[in-house]
Image (tube, rainbow over all chains, first blue to last red; front, top):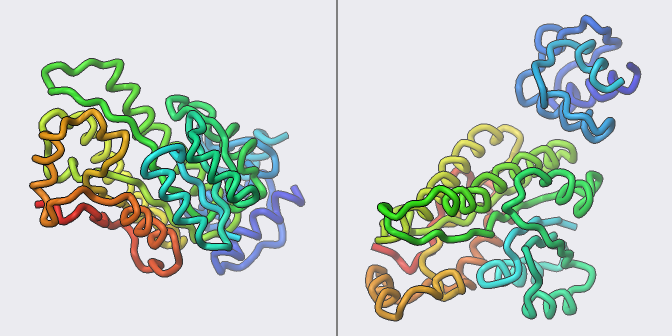
Length: 72
Length: 242
């Protein structure tokens, strides 16, 4: 979760948004973190580089929990 | 260093694009083609460190990420530009249209380039690069020639893809443009008779073939920072086709 938080904050920083202190499995990417489709693309890419998993390849990803299920 | 990915580097225009880009000393070219030509071998001897090459058949839509981006370039190497140059021509009149050759052409000219674009943009995002994409299209899209309907349709698809890519990724500083090339004296037009060629050249303002040098230099410009404000455009290098 720590590494995922770093990735999330990298994306928020790149977009000039405020970083967050913590995330949990229920954190919603769009509603809680304010990610738009381009942010989600960057998230996909950074997770792919780290874990070699394309989180959007099959199905919709809404929350942090959806991501951890795919990379664990 | 600026790293540029180019397809179809073994012959004709592709070879000329590689030459032009390597004239800039801070560039590295990642070249792809099915096979190595003597011209490419000579260029690799001349630039042993700045010209890298891998054999890849663009008919293969499925291994773009694994082979080109992971094995060849490497996820940790930033890419700054992509030139979609490789293409095959399926020349025939429409009433003779067959599915298999049509599909083969679309794989090489459209489907695989779309997947390369997908991963190029992902690469740009990962490395925070304001990269430039250039697709090579053909004047046949805009003027029409007998026997080129299928080929021109594949290039028209790329033009629409480029325009929309530019719109979608512009806010990240990522650009996409089309180089609309006129008829050149390359292997691709070698099957045309002299008479056919002359009729084509007569339809240009300059009455001459388009030179690969002029096309390559314009692509080099579109990849460079000098073209920073140009995106979503068709740039015509075509001896003024009318």
